[in-house]
Length: 265
Image (cartoon, rainbow, N blue to C red):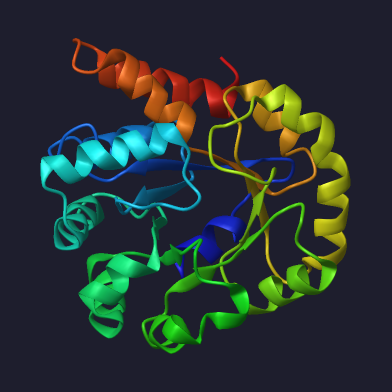
């Protein structure tokens, strides 16, 4: 069974699963494996590893910054696969690659999906692949037992939400606001998200629902994800690293934030 599916089947009543995004190769190439394992120990249920790209459509300044640093550090898709293989030596946490189609096309779609599966990747999030144009990669994803996670947003029609649900596996990624990552605060988002989630719950019936964009605290997570199966945090983690790296204890700063996001203390 796919690790993502198993994680949701093991979810306890009332629990909100926490998916955490970090950019592979940021802040340096040597830390990614340790960061993933440390985040898991502090409450992460799912990990999203960002594939750095020079022209990201959905990422705000924070994640763009981390991608630029990772590219300068020499990150490559093959190095990301090596990182995941190392994680798999000691952990079975679900791992999703989040990136853009251009690097995948350059690498080779068939080769990419095969090597992703071999390394221990469980699924893909490709924000610039429209749900009705996913044939470019769908067969290769299916052939390698990977999950394809599509996104919906407040401006998605009911028809598009249902289509995303039918074409997704693992979960559906609900973008709480239109725009880029990290651009708004949780209070601003939670006040407008209820209507959106009501529509999501009406139209997304085959997959779990994870909601992201703008979550920076335990309170944000509980408020924004109150009617979802879990929440996704990215920019807040990158900002934490940016503020403390390379000072001694920077990793513990991150792990403390992860613990508080999940447990509230």
